[in-house]
Length: 64
Image (tube, rainbow, N blue to C red; front, top):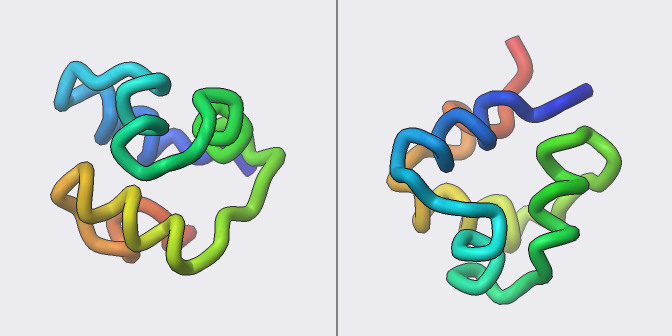
């Protein structure tokens, strides 16, 4: 399942995949794969992404 919430939160901050990736210590491809629903990130990476975007885990990664 695509993670449109991640893509949307990143876009609101005018942040590219590359910028987010650099901030959390992964490759741009990793962020792209998470957004495309082709990669399940570790909890540690989820937390780092949420901190960078100023969102909670529920807001970005919880389905529903």
